[in-house]
Image 1 (cartoon, rainbow, N blue to C red):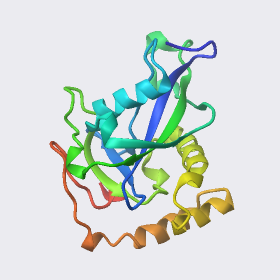
Image 2 (image 1 turned 90 degrees about the vertical axis):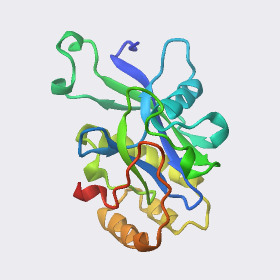
Image 3 (image 1 turned 90 degrees about the horizontal axis):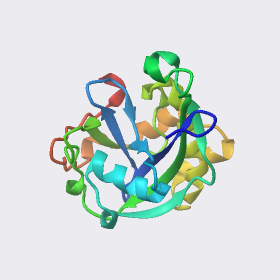
Image 4 (image 1 turned 135 degrees about the vertical axis):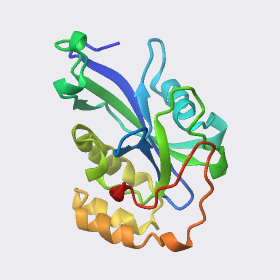
Length: 204
């Protein structure tokens, strides 16, 4: 289902835990990391598609999350021709997305990367809100930055990471400072069924 400009409607999901860390998934059989996302089927609302994709990709049900916010308008990215099937070239241009910020209100063990027979991820971790965009496939990075920036205002005010929003742009050195504050050695990780934990997605 494409719009008149060749963009497919899609949803993206930023899932927070109680520490305002985000679910960060490693795409199956690849070295790229991303947030859950997926297409909106004909007849679905963006919210209905979000709940469906949430279950298909990470195994969560509506009662496991609370909606914090969503982007006001569609965010678009174009897909390079080399990633488009030949029969779709000239028609399909890319994705237009509504992004949702969700808070996990259940336990980590409800996450399940094998909820369907076609998993999207083979590893996951909790990461600081400002994720490293250099491990995201290049053509999605601009949309990630726009979604994270727009939705960051809905994080609790006492989250120190909000101060990076005032600069208007996510800076790499800010990511590095935040990454150093994670305290990986003291973290307790509960892995979901079929999941594995990678302590540093930049060294896969």
